[in-house]
Image 1 (cartoon, each protein chain N blue to C red):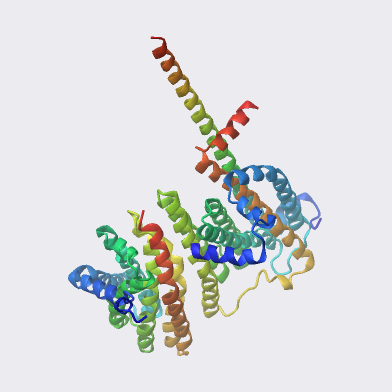
Image 2 (cartoon, chains in turn yellow, cyan, green):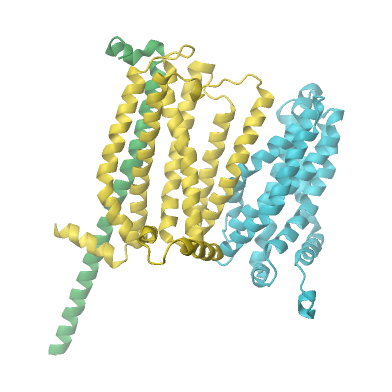
Length: 269
Length: 231
Length: 72
């Protein structure tokens, strides 16, 4: 993979001078210490933003938005189900991209982000599945219906489980990170294939598909809180990712001098 | 490329294919177990469901495909395992040949000793499970292409777990999501034929999956082996 | 508000149980995703401070031992 980083650096240096400040941020991100200190500064504001946006979206969607003509009030679960499903999918891509960056640029910081992203994405997938099942009961009469979207979500959960299981199977941190990164990339290539196959499989067996969340046909009054909730979930994901990554940094770097200085400074206060 | 040294070096595909076939021939009993598993477990289906031909014919295609998938999954664990334990995997890693090609040779040998026998035995199972007559040719074609895909994707999983002790179970967990498109289109081929529809489109998609797997899986497996085999 | 009163909000024409159970489970798991790393972080920092303490005690003991040897 190092040939890729050399080629990219050569291509980039044609467009930017070597000492350009605009790429320093990328290499600084590779320093665990810098990330730990900076994220500590950003977290309070980001958490506040996430809390406010989520609260707004939730109250708006649950109490103020109109109910659906066909499904009644149970359609309000959409304000949790759709953002969670969205983030579950995006979370897998974030994890895979972090793995790819770690493989290409040999950045251990990127591998730490990848390891942190896995459980968050898995939990979000579980939330999507759970809310989807609970939503299915009043809508279709059963808790579990093998429709295309739920089946794709379930397969996504298995993909997450595979990446996490591989991470914990290896003793060597280096091998675990690289193997999981390769698996995450293989999974990323497969996700569109799996989604399309499951879609196609579902149309084979169920000619009448119920389109629950086709956004364009949703009334503006119902769509706006959904948008707010999606933004809120993204902010929440960022907060959770930062917290888990900081943990991973502490775990891996606890023998270094900067961590010890940090602890001493805290104790001194 | 006219120097004598360049002419001597070949890709390693044929050499590793021949080696693995020879080793499989010496362990004929072990290698036959996926096929035996395939046939024996198919006996469980009427025991577990129903012996009625009408009911069985509805599920025959899917069950045969599932059994083939499980049999392949069981056997793909040993693709790199014995080589890892006796050190020849490291030899494969340090040869001057491009790593994906020996891997492709090993996977081809694996398919010739697992997937192909499964494909050839499947009409017998179709008979036992009352598969309608229109389904036999599609079954053979789809299993031939499908088991090849399963071997290729399984090789990636085997490469990722080769150095782990209890790698087999983890391997199943890792490759199962990747197997799902193959089984969807494989069973769709047979079921379309049984329903009287054109069964070539799903088979064509299966062929596309095979083409993509042949191109990409050896690369992924090579990358994975470089990471895991030295740990 | 879309509903007339608070009781109607909870009931939601009979669908309330589904909606509120989903909301509860979601908020609980999201909260756990935030709280678990915070607890873990505190535990890790405590471990590091214990390590530092142990290191200091070891250095102190080594210092005392070398002082004793020097003066005898």
